Amino acid sequence: MKFGVPMIWKEPLCHTTDYYFCLSKQTGIGKNMRWVYANVPSITFPVPHSDTFPIPNCPDLSQSQTSVISQSSSTDTSDFRSDLTECQGQHEQHLLTQEELNDWVRDLELSKEKAELHASRMKQYHFLDTSVKVTYYRDRDRPYTKYYTSTDNICFCKDIPGLFEELGQPYNAHEWRLFIDSNKSSLKAVLLHNGNEKPSIPIAHAINTKESYETMVKLVKSLNYEDHDWKVCADLKVTGMLCGLQRGYTKYCCFLCFWDSRAREHHYKRKQWPERKSHTLGEGNIKYLPLIKKENILLPPLHIKLGLFKNFVKALDIEGQAFAYLRTLFENLSFAKIKEGPQIKKLLKDDKFQTYLSSVEAAAWNSFQLIVSDFLGNNKSPNYETIVENLLQNYAKMGVNMSLKIHFLHSHLNFFPENLGDVSDEHGERFHQQMKNIERRYQGNWDERMMGDYIWFLIRETDSQRNRRQSGGQTYF
Image (tube, rainbow, N blue to C red):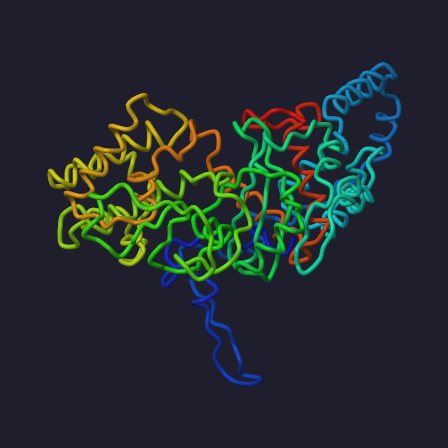
């Protein structure tokens, strides 16, 4: 070592006055160029060798010392070796198995190519068990990929009963409901189990498509919907397309009746509206032929809950204390975002929000909380009709505009299923987040192999014998 004490850099306390590399300056040009090193508290300059810090000498074993070492007792050597063997046994290197490596790759969210590279490097440096196969990542989806095919930018399952048989599960179409939704990148169709006891099964994935009637026609035909006749749970926009309604804010936007959305003088007053008994193109905002029967539609409780909350926030006084509190509570959101409705879960747990509400607003807020817990969730109260009626009355006093979602509570309460938690669309929204991770792994190559790989991950998540993670209460395959 050139110095008795090397140069030491500590963590700087201030970037402008205590940062060595930024404060060191260069002076002069050419041969006269010199560096002026900053003297800041965060560094310790090197100290050259001196009487205090002499240059260390390498010890040289003399012949006598060598003879002494060679004459050491064999018993001491054997004791040392036994202690060394015991120490190595305690700190023996653990070699990863195939299942442990799979969990490792999944936690790192590596793409298939990077997973193979990562596994090959680890096997090269002897971190893996001899039974681990690097090429395993190339064909692990093969048993499930054969059930999917792609056409017109839609990857769909061509043999749904065969896929369930491959999973070791009996297939009964009445035990599953079809969820259809899209985000900015793709449109997805997934089978959700009624009762939510089994994992969701993706059956279609479309890219570069929009939520349009033409896309729904391709999707319904690809899945052979008539052979399965599932119940459909989706947002009201998709539901309207499947029933042949015109898109947008139209006059007759309800697929069950001829409710006039523009006749505000009748809102909250008139419950009975003419029923839609037939579909005639060009009448009542009917633009297309219906693709499913209206009896197979399940109203989405999550979207209805968010719609009720959104209309409540819109009816608040912008200059009032309640809206000012929302601006403070959600300071990262813009005015427009708050007006559309902030995070509902955070606000439901906030006890201070109600103290800023007026008496009319507080009554409406209490009714909303009650309908969330006793009607739109897993528990349906015996007096749910009274709860819904109180909500509508309080919303009317508050001046909340009636939307299509409020109209279903007002005029079609009997159309809701017995238990909304068993057929909720919330599990479909969770599927969006799960699918988002595997879409990131495949980096735009969204084809049959991605769908097969998702099924493989699904089994890994739910099989207790192959995976050390908890499955979240879902039935194992």
